[in-house]
Image 1 (cartoon, rainbow, N blue to C red):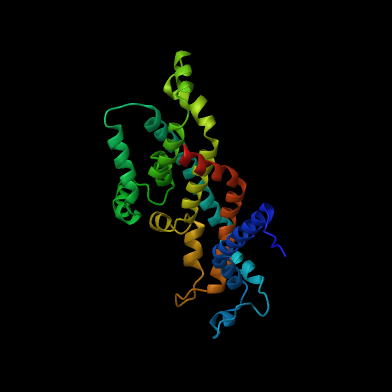
Image 2 (tube, helix red, strand yellow):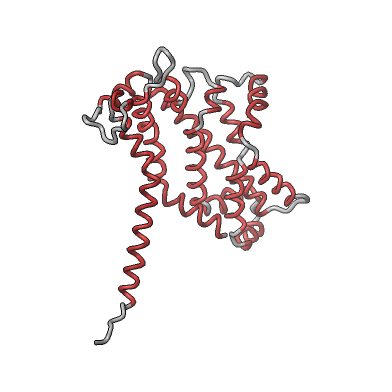
Amino acid sequence: MTATLPGPRTRIHGRRLVLYTVLVVITGLFLGPFGWLVLTGLKTPAELAASPVHWLPAHIQWHNFADAYRLIDFLGYARNSLIIATLYATLVTLSSAWVGFGFARLSAPGKKALFGVLLGSMMLPQMVTLLPTYLIFAKLGMVDTYWPWVLWGLAATPYLVFLFRQFFAGLPRELEEAAIVDGCGYAGIFWRIFLPQSWPVLAASFVIAFTWTWGDYIAPQLLLSTDRTTLAVAVMTTYVTEAGQPVTHLQAAASVMYVVPILLVFLVAQRGFVAGMSTSGLK
């Protein structure tokens, strides 16, 4: 008898099956912590303290989410987070695009050295600059206001500058040469030609900056009062007992509701986010 060798289609289907299996496993690993957070928010305090661990709640406690929502001014804190995150993400996206355009298309002495210093600043941890930043804002009377996020947004950020610089460097030189011949300055070239071309990077930059600010805990805790603070700080500091012990099931329920806006922003802008990350890297 003659052995039958697997055909090309069989091999392709086998490779796809292996690939899909690996992707499902990786997806499960990434979704595991979020799934455990959801389950924690659906349990009773007794189930959370039980030993051995109760993996699934005996009776789903949907009221935990209602209690977490009701015990604090959830919408008020969410509004503060939304204002700060949207304001910062919009300003830092535009300012980083402008700086990236300058590094990509303009010539000046020491540009490469300055760009190296910019990239080197990415290695500085936030804690190093936190105290000097606080002292500056305190001297300027900006503590307990949203002005620090406005100034941070106008100052651009190195990682986003790098993304825009990589994208703008890959655009054809003929575009700006034709605009210069028509009498357009570099500001007009940026706003009329380059910025409309960079919508994938704009989407990626906005999502990254929005996520940074929405999830930031240190800066709002340091600079804002209880009434003006963000949802991240409220979730971590409000659901506690009189003895200062965290109420875990309420914290978990509030954390699930806290994560939902970020998931919605990413789902809406995911196509532009992926395209922006890929085009800025390839070009």
